[in-house]
Length: 582
Ligand code: GLY
Image (cartoon, rainbow, N blue to C red; front, side):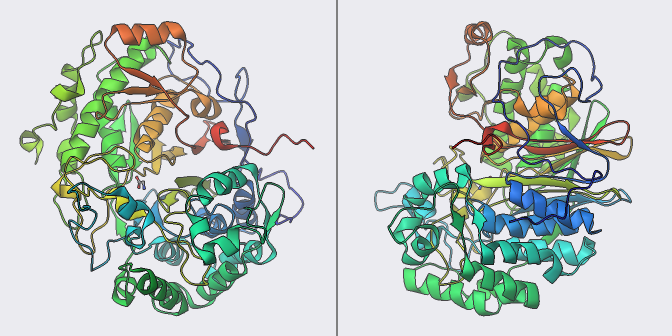
């Protein structure tokens, strides 16, 4: 289906731009940031003069670009993309919760929190099994796994406060995609075949949508129609978020919960509220960094790690060098140790954001980092902060010609959430309750441990790592970025900032560069393929425990070049349909 008018030169589409996979990337770059442009680079960003959308899905990106072309601002486009992904990227988009960071042309930066909330009936020990241990089947695949969804409240709030178009207009493309169907891409086909067989297939209403009459999931190249979802989206387009939180969709969610023994009831839905929050803010080598505040841990820890890194000359060490990786991974340990202790829903616990993001605190942590010897995680505890007190997911970025910039990360948690569909609404239910700390010290799906600050309580929001992030230079948006990936989100976004600011990579290079990750526990430096054996050997000699594992993240970023040109890149790790075959 063609959603766009014939291409014009002023707006280019940038999803699915990179064909190549991450190549070895261990070049030493000692100079300060270069031109960030498109020449003399292995990896090339897409460029455009006016507006841009970067998302994981080409069709959803086209929806956003079409809204920009029609004169919509970046918020209009972001809301349109958000609902389009509910149709075309049901792995993460259909309709859980998340966060939006937006910047207005006047330079105001706002965070919108539409994270799921624990239902009123949730209890602290609800995921502890008979053996006294946390039972992840309860928190991931049972009807208890779902928090009250926030995406519809968040997107409609953003549109009403910052958009310029009406809801019906920006939802029209999503409704059409659901009604008329879209062609399933490799990514969705693969995820249906793998994860769909683990969860969706167990529920007749989910199976009826994503599996064919012969019992097989839809495969690449086939058309997937979602008429029930089209009806639900039409209700929302006409009635606003009331349809979801009070009306017909609410009734179907509650009935499904009752039928299966879940907790979300009418009051949970009626009381749900998306909130505007103040973004967490920091600085890094002269750039302003804005990111998501609690209940996401992302912004706090990205800024904390950047503050630590400011004490080292990463540019001189060089991208991909053992020294740069050593410093960064040691800094990550300190941040994740603090995360386990201090981070939670700020409406329930006092999160020491100011202390955690203070330069002085970072300096004490930087002083503990030894360039030559990794410090075992077992010897690192959450920091003493009082001295400083006086603070399967998807991401997309949108920018328009007037200077609005929007970064959204939202999710059902794991692929297709719990797999449970609310009646015949076409709406999948999340399994975000797993992001709470079910029991102190017990890791969740992402291996993250937590304590009281992230214990389950009624109407509390589970701690997240989602980190839509904006970087501002000289008062103007310079970079917007974000990623899925659970606990890897924080370190993936961090590396986008460091790759561009310290190593002078253009946005496509920064995206393609191999990533690494350390989260304190387990004490393991996880790396993607692509680092040189020499580098790995040096890291081992420093005492790092290395693990080469599958790729991390799917970054969707846009950078504004010094001449105002927009340069964007979609992560090659999740692109799959530019090359064709038969
Ligand atoms: N569900 C993953 C996160 O919010 O971090």
